[in-house]
Image (cartoon, rainbow, N blue to C red; front, side, top):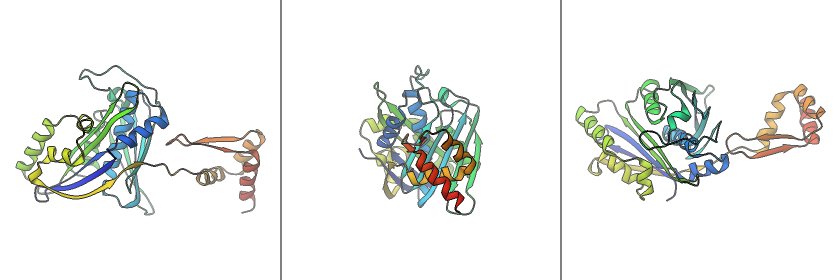
Length: 294
């Protein structure tokens, strides 16, 4: 099944909801970072939650989520844009743990329960919007839900889920976001809560070949839904040699001179995709000359 996102209105406009399949995108990130099971689940859930938050953005507008907890995985960062492109990384990719008491991948141990979830929205304005909340759970679904309630004053629910194969590859990944509009009735809220409590893990539904629309129907009831749009999703990293060249120039003459003096090529690795960029001494000298001649 291809990665994509589906958006709906429900209960006569009382509810907005999005569900997505991200198995390939999370799988690509797993391969690029060689993450182990528990780290894969934490990174994947962060990527999925980030794409859900970015579902209201347009085109190149982008959103970055930073999860800074006290867990074994260290910092987790994900980025998504309004065009359905996402990427992510985890500081410590090689975390594999016994299953938790519920028989699930122990994401809480990877993320931690003390720390923060920060959301930065770049909407092409002078200053990006940033919101931060403390981690309240560490499994990430509840943490994204808490962010919506506190930073954006939107009540609702976020579910994020990743299923990993014994060989560390990603078997299924996806999630949903339900947003209650002002004026949502107690009856509507009660029905949605009941449905959320009944739904199996999203990744297990995807593994059984259910699509995003099937998941939304489970969450909201087919008779209550008006389907709005679908959008393809993909792992995409926009790193480039030109971008890293600009980054080297921004270091300044003094630091570039030190690198040249070492008489070794400089290697830069992209955090998001592990692509390596090597700059020879001659190239470093040319970059320094650009600064000198400005």
